[in-house]
Amino acid sequence: MLKRGLPPVHPGEILREDYIRERGLTVTQVAKGIGVARENLSAVVNGRAGISPELAVKLSEAFGNSTQFWVDLQKNYEVWHAERKVNRSQIEHFAGKDLQVAQ
Image (cartoon, rainbow, N blue to C red; front, top):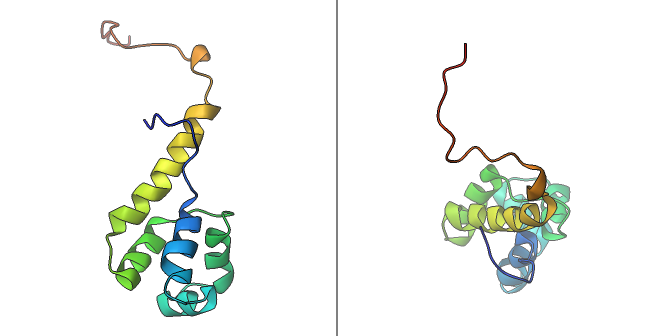
């Protein structure tokens, strides 16, 4: 669970700013280079889609970092938003209850 007040940056923004723009690349070049549709990569860099595990593998190969780096960026982003969306007060708690065999 992330305990931050500010939302994490969308992984697509990190991809766009730190990996594509910083290297003087375009979304079209990167999409072609990793074998994905330009529209799909554009959706990611513009925050309309997330980084799938398959895309994470391709990005890690293309930019020389780990697949886990990209997966963690996406996971942290999603968990931060989920923590704020879920109403915990309406969830029944089972921790500490004795295990009973259903009959």
